[in-house]
Image (cartoon, rainbow, N blue to C red):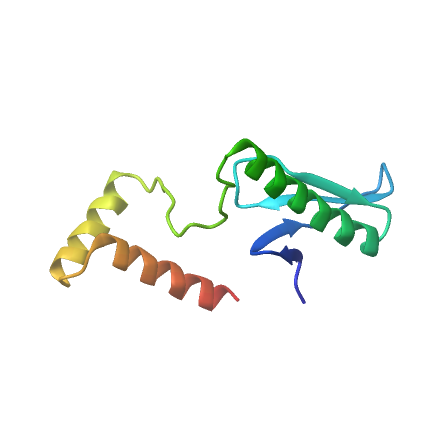
Length: 113
């Protein structure tokens, strides 16, 4: 069961506001703030798609490249000791640091699922 909405390669969150009695969400993985809401699942999904379509149309009209979610790169801060240990491990195993971190993250997320 998915906890997000998907459309045109974008993902959107799904949350409930007990105070307002509405479902709401935002596009995930982009810097631009795109939000939507609905009183039921059908209206939430419809408004999610409409919000994304409006965002993409706005970007096209402005000549702006829309933010792409999850490009495959991100910065992390791990502290000097862990950075050193990972870099030395990569060197000792004739690997790039990115490959070591990527494999560690994949293994962690596989075990956590």
